[in-house]
Image (cartoon, rainbow, N blue to C red; front, side, top):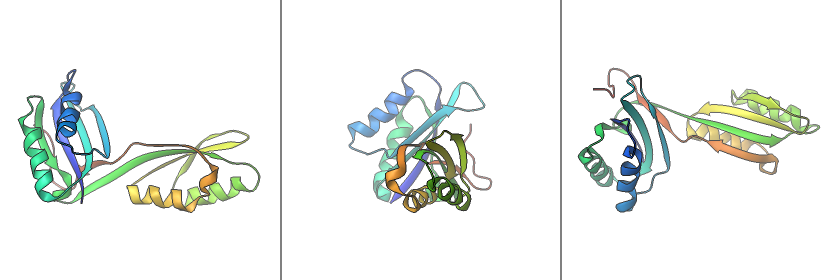
Amino acid sequence: MKHIIAILLENEAGALSRVVGLFSARGYNIESLIVAPTEDESLSRMTIQTRGSEETIEQITKHLNRLIEVVKVIDLTESSYIEREHMMIKMRAVGQEREEIKRTCDIFRGRIIDVTDKSYTVELTGDQSKNDAFLNAIDRSAILETVRTGASGISRGERVLRL
């Protein structure tokens, strides 16, 4: 089962490597990882997407809480949350393909952010299934390059990740 774990940790050198090392040492896989400073410059927020049973995720959470740099850990998938992923796709776009790409972008609420004589770069933001659906809707042979951030998430309502 997919889980999105949000971690508030001290914004210092080596903190990221200790979290990743914890996953690696125990054989847990990280499907995506995002980390950036918060509004408090001394803290960073890390979002990790992983898969595992409830017992495995509980183990991961316990191990993360033992790390000195970790301030707080929550599993966003335990309650209602909002998930987004940012994706950019550079695509071959010549002749008739140009209009088809524009129509598909409109359907998926994507934006064309760069145009050349032979290519478009498309930007999409949404949950992973939406971005996957866009990839399935276009001609795969037209894709020149794809960049995805992985899952980012935030709890809905009153639940917050802060001190």
